[in-house]
Structure formats: structure tokens, C-alpha cells
Amino acid sequence: MILITGATGLVGSHLLLHLLQNGEEVRALYKNQENIKKTEALFRWKNQPLLFDKINWVPGCISDIPALEIAFENIDYVYHCAAVISFNPDDEEQLRKVNIEGTANIVNFCLAKNVKKLCHVSSIAALGDLQEQETIITEETEWNPEKPHSDYGITKYGAEMEVWRGEEEGLKTIIVNPGIILGTGFWQNGSSEVFIRIKKGLKYFTKGATGFTTVNDVVKIMAALMKSDISKERFTIVSEIIPYEKLSRTIAKALGKKEPSINLKPWQTSIAWKLDWLVSTLFFRRRNLSRATAKAMHTHSNFDNSKIKNALNFEFESIENYIAEVKNTF
Image 1 (cartoon, rainbow, N blue to C red):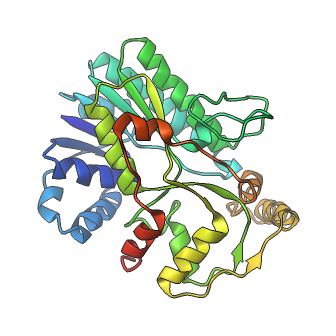
Image 2: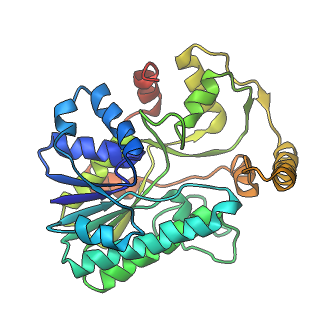
């Protein structure tokens, strides 16, 4: 049997659907019934309500040891998708507890229960830092602890260290490092929230660029890697390097909305994150814009996807085509 953590999130829900469509027996970890409704909605949209009924749901989270004892009974393979995704500095403690300590718990249970293989979902935020003469980030690019990183990136890197520890102790592992994931069914949070913002009339864009991929490609690659003999490897999952301006315009065009027209300069977003910090401090509200996010909006990051393409002979789907396909689903 297969266990999926983070089964009610974007990747976990789509992975559940993909595995069940391929005849796998799946157990899913969930925190509350409300979260399950999002996964059920995805299965209904995909016209697969009968497959949803085959999921073996287990209540709990990756920080709940007694719940994990139950969840890991008779498990052969584990897909670890659970994580906190936040660039708010106020969430540092939660990021460390879930992303690092939670991953350590999963690794420990995999070892104790003789799990055959673990697939860990990391992020491009955990990949290394370019040296002066380098232009593209690969799986072998070294992490430089002296360079600034977001708390999210630091904790995802820390989680990877726990996975490699498991590998050294005898656990077969795979790590995937997806770029920004676009997917259906979870429009109110995460990376897909950009669709809602543009639908409401987003006016601004920045000149940065980064790697994007679709949730379909992510789950297909994860499943293929788990069935393969490949282990002790990490793979960058990036379909295309897309400027934020181009992505915003592509989505706006697909939705029939006005394209963003105001180019925010670095000095403007610098002022914005400082003002946001001041307002959040004075009025005790959550941050909307962090320093790390403001910087990323103007950074052009280039990632190499050749390793996964060669390992699986994999061809990524077009981001533009995917946007056109899902435009009417929210």
C-alpha cells in the first residue's frame, strides 16, 4: 500500500487521483474533514467520484506520532507531499516544525517500518546558489549558507538533509524539486492564486522570471521515479523559465481580462515590503509582502531540467496550453 502525506493539498490531491487511476491502493493522511472536501471536489471535476471512495483516509499530521503509527501500518511506499509554504517571516517556527521536524518523523517511520522507497517533494527554493561564472542552477549547484535565503527555502533544504540521512541509514529515496506549480482546484491559496488575482484585475507586473511547471507533470514524474530503480537522486521539475510579466499576460489573455500594465520597479517593491512590515507590526496583522518575496519578484532564475528529461525520457507539457485548458475551471 502507498501512503501520501499532504494528501489534501495541490500535489497530494492530484497524486491521489493519478495513482488511483493507475490501479494503486492508497492511504491518505489528513488534518480535518474540511480539507478533504477540496480533494473530493477535484475528483468530481475529473468525473472520478468512484475513485474517491477508494481512498483509505487516516486522520493526523506529520507531527502527530500516534497518528503516524496507524498511518504506516502495512505501507510499502511513501510520497511525502506535506509542507508549510510561506514566505512570511512570522511563520519561521511553524516552517521549521513542519518542514524539517515533520520530515524527520516521516523518515524515521520509513526506516522503522521497512518502507521500500520514499519520494520527498522539495522545491527549487532548496537548490543551490550560483557562483560568479555560473548561469544556470542544476541539481549539483552547491548551497551557500552565507547567502540570504527565505525561511521557506532554508527549511526545505533542512528537510532534504533529513531525507539524505534516511538514505544513509538504508532507506531508498527520491527528491523532486518542482518550480512554481500551476494546477486546478486550489485557487484560493498557493501558486494558483495568481489566476484569481488576474481575474479580479491585477494591474502590476515585475521583470523577474523563474521556473514553472504543471501539477500534472509533477505527479507523473513522481510516480515514474518511484516505479523506477532510481534512488539517492534529486530532480529539478521545471517545464519552462517564464518571466512574471509574460505569465500574467498569458493568463489575462486566456481569461479575457485586461493585461497588467504597470511595471513595478525594485525600489517600489522595496518600499512596499517595508511599509507592509510597519503596518503589520502596528496593527498585529499578517504580512502580505516579505523582503524575500520582494527580491524574488525582480530576480531572473534559470534552472536546468535536462536531468529528469534524460532519466525518464520525459517531455513537459506547455504552460501556455495548460492555462488555456484550465481557464474555465474556477
